[in-house]
Length: 409
Ligand code: ATP
Ligand code: MG
Image 1 (cartoon, rainbow, N blue to C red):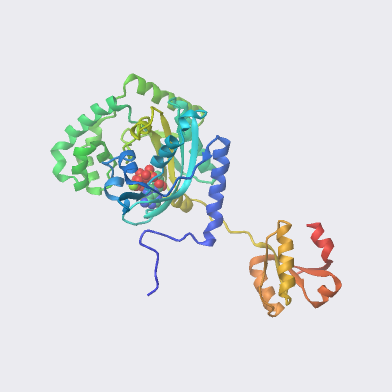
Image 2: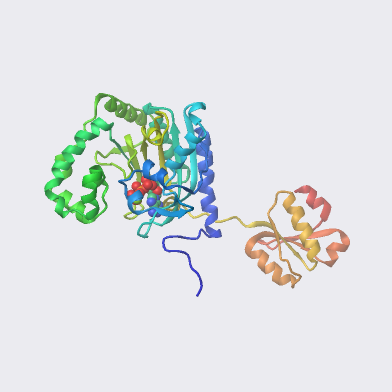
């Protein structure tokens, strides 16, 4: 039996490549403008990195990791890249470099989830991380960079949802209030939420189970919860962030119940959603993580970042066709065709040949499908040092001097 792709994985086919490349080209351009430098970390890391970095009580670590043992070491295919980038930051003592350190990444991530539209087991993320600034201007600039990036790839109908989770102190009060409101309804919540109630109650707000959402609505939990009250410092930080976003003309909606699914966030969290996606409507998520570097054994280095799902981004952007080739060399002399195609390539043109000496009509038919011009080198042309250049859109053709033609390119 033929071997197929694994559930939740996909081939990115050659015809999809032009659109992928356009997105990546935009990333390079926008991130370069804002002084983010690309980093690539390994696809597998010590399992412990994610247990400590992403958090033991998250869905990602509890249910979604691809982990395996090798030589007595537990390894995991990275489910996200922030933990890996923080590890690299510390391993290469980037805290001694010019601060802030601004990095971006692109690559595959792996999560054992139930595959559905917009949700795969191997998917790709583009993300940025900024280390070394606690100021709200860093959050604002990261969010603005995301907005600029989305604009540059032509995304429309996006909304930015914004919240502040405050510091540990701010969250303690909010958590206690949430627990008190939920406790009477605990039996009606899903098994995951029952566990979350013990390990990380805030995460219940992020539950996607419709029954849990029902319980929340019926009992008006969110209304009664009201928003998280921030301490003075966290409140100032959040107000400053909003004033910077206003100044940059970034439209956002405050969502006091946005918590995000990861353990490491402090203060700012945000999500970018698209009306044009179905139920998996989040394109991008991020926030501030001032304690993560310390959690992973480093000094206190405040940081902020975000990640966007490449496949969801791809589905929201316009199809891009690979342009046709410049030239297709048509000849019954394979050696000459090979030579000429490579001379054209060395002039920075795109060129193909047939690797056969079959009938010219067949070669030209194929050329018409993939190329703008056919360059014909038959017996006559070879004898006279000429080429016949045929425009495959208008079918006009012209015989030119071989040397002069190549020089003119
Ligand atoms: P969701 O709520 O959709 O599960 P998440 O909070 O788990 O998202 P993050 O870990 O913040 O997502 O990842 C950021 C982005 O990566 C998401 O907004 C989404 O675009 C993308 N993403 C996450 N998981 C998947 C997946 N399994 N398949 C495809 N894209 C994904
Ligand atoms: Mg998820």
